[in-house]
Image (cartoon, rainbow, N blue to C red; front, side, top):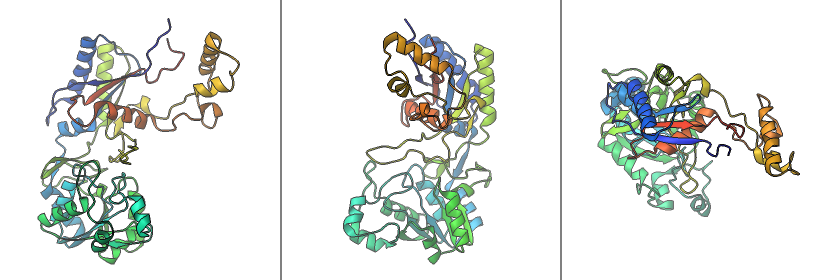
Length: 397
């Protein structure tokens, strides 16, 4: 009987991580203890992944509202600040907004519509159509928005983010005006000092704002790029990828992760004799078909990974072969023919029809998404994931 199991993804339980913990030791021992308890072995090209949250926590990479406020005040002057294109999230942005508001006298909050960048909707597309509103052209005041669409609560969280963000800014000591627009240049009618909070379009937004006359223009990735009063920081991503830790503190995206993944790879090699791949992962890159939310609120899926995870899949489409090249075959004869094609496939299948329909994404994005779905974001207690058989194919027994 040939081998029947392909890829297996296991959530690995671990202790609750605190600042200063030896993550190399914890990850390695957790994986090895799981293998002993469940009776499986570690193999070459297995993947050990850990969520970015435990890396940042072990690093103590945190910033407070006051730290953020000080950095915002220093960089933007402390007057009126435009805050544009934030995502609608209590976990991802609310505490950052508290800090921004505390570092300003007034905030002009410009929200994209009908949804934020990752798909949290303020307005339904059908409602826009029924009111004759063109989101690519029309700019809405708060009053006009309420007149047309009323009070809209998020489908899953039950929060009216327009009201929530406005009140949060006022509680932090700043005045607030809210507008709705999708052209970043609209904010420059109100202030030349802008923080653009978009994630994956940030380079373009910053370029447009500066070209249109923005004076002090910063992306969210340019706030908290260095320590403030001994705080944590992230020199590459700033506040992007941060999460709420407490009501006045955020956990930042981890930094300097590459030495950690290399050290875990080496220790597992020494203890098991197998060359595993290791990565740090954050949000996966997938979209909810019901809520329309795109999961990727982190700046990247994986901030650090070992060299064997570089690149994209190089796979044949089995059903293409079965329906085309070997349509006349069946049973064992078909099986052997397909195995033969796999064994002789080119090292680079880009552009070839036999790879049509295979997923054209980076390995780290695919594997990181699998890890994120395996570990979840709640109380599973499995911040480490072991994936086995991912790089196998139909020929591997």
